[in-house]
Amino acid sequence: MRQARTSGTSTDSDQNQATGQNLSTDRKITISNHGGFKEKLAKMESTLNQANSSTSSTTIDWLVPHPFVCEKQFEFCGHPLNIARYFGGNLGFSASIWESALVLCQYFEQEKISFSGRKVIELGSGTGIVGILAVLLGGDVTMTDKENVLSQIEHNVSTNIPSTFRHRSKVCALSWGKDHIKFPADYDFILGSDIVYTSLTYPLLLETLLHLSNEPTIIYLASKLRTGNQSTTFHETLLPQHFNCQLVHRVEDKNINVYKVSKLGSKRRDDLLM
Ligand SMILES: C[S@@+](CC[C@H](N)C(=O)[O-])C[C@H]1O[C@@H](n2cnc3c(N)ncnc32)[C@H](O)[C@@H]1O
Image 1 (tube, rainbow, N blue to C red):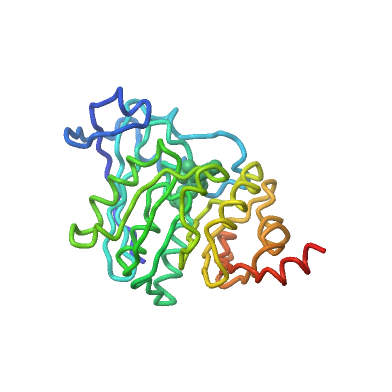
Image 2: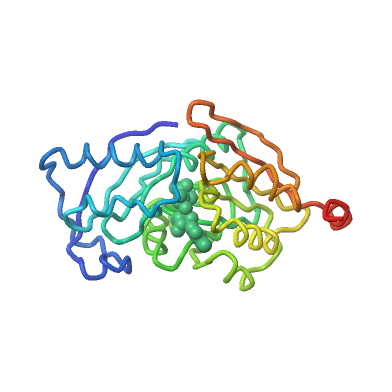
């Protein structure tokens, strides 16, 4: 994986940006680095990524003088990616590229995973980096998140997926525990990076995973294990009531685990629940 420079650009469609909707990037203003602004932003992002607890509603929006788009370059599996984040649009946690996303992309690279001809859904896509890579690796991918995050994902889809492959990508609103019923239950793969981060959503997430999967479905979850948010309990106690959970990769210094998860057969589930 190669991670290169960060560049900052700002758009002047501030009204839309304030609500996180339809952020236009037609008219870009390059942000000057007044008072080391970009360094402060990078430090804040790194602090958020390292934070042991993510249960507060901390966002870096307060740092932002005007809404703007910040781009970061990566390369995975030979595919260059240019990922934009919309700061100041009240996207909160969705406006960061979380380390778990990069770990999951690295895992796909290391394991030479192919999604060719497979039906994939990503939950809590954020910037869409994982789902976009899955499209470039051959998948027919639906990237999902809350409604207000979709324009950021759509922007990244249009920048990173060549038009000839774009018919294999879809961006849709999916709020866990609510909208999953609008989606089919026959995905080959379900992907999620850093979506296990607040215990308030675990029952909703579980309900959504149960709806979207069948026994052959492979679920990859990359999760940073933070103290205080019971992410270990989610993976080691809640999930195993319905799914086989295998730890397939761990990045020790970041305390990030990648789990390969598949649904238990109904008999096995009944036995466990008795
Ligand atoms: C920590 S961010 C991770 C973003 C991205 N996957 C990454 O790793 O960079 C968590 C993501 O989950 C989404 N999310 C949180 N609760 C959700 C819910 N109830 N329904 C749908 N998405 C949700 C957030 O909007 C956010 O984009």
